[in-house]
Image (cartoon, rainbow, N blue to C red; front, top):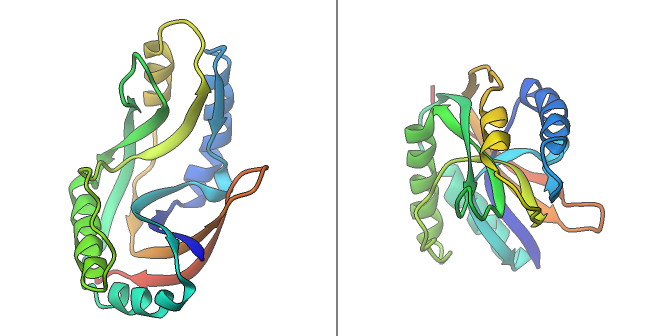
Length: 185
């Protein structure tokens, strides 16, 4: 079995900004947070979970059949799931490209459903995970979210998406690209 997801890799400029951002955010809280690591930071379009390896060729074929356009993406804003009062996940939103990322996720959902992958029941909400709150400390989370939202993120062109295998380890997950799929234009 392989733990799979489909996502958009982020450019080096984003990865370089992540470490200083999370370091500064860490100083604003006493909570235990597992921060995203620059090398694995991405935007998830579809989480497939544990998948039989024999199904991977059909998944690749389904994803290769998509004809979606390139688009510009730029991070902006910040929030928390399920909410800022009881955060479990801290995230950046998309100031540009949210509609296009949602459209791409929908096309991926349709293509994979055609080869037997169950549809996601939750509505897709494009975001970049900054960290997962493991043990929340007391206090107001809004200053931390406001600080996260102040980083200026450059726009970049999304011209491909990737089928990844995620391997869990005590030191964190590692992501291996199994196949990349070009977007049109």
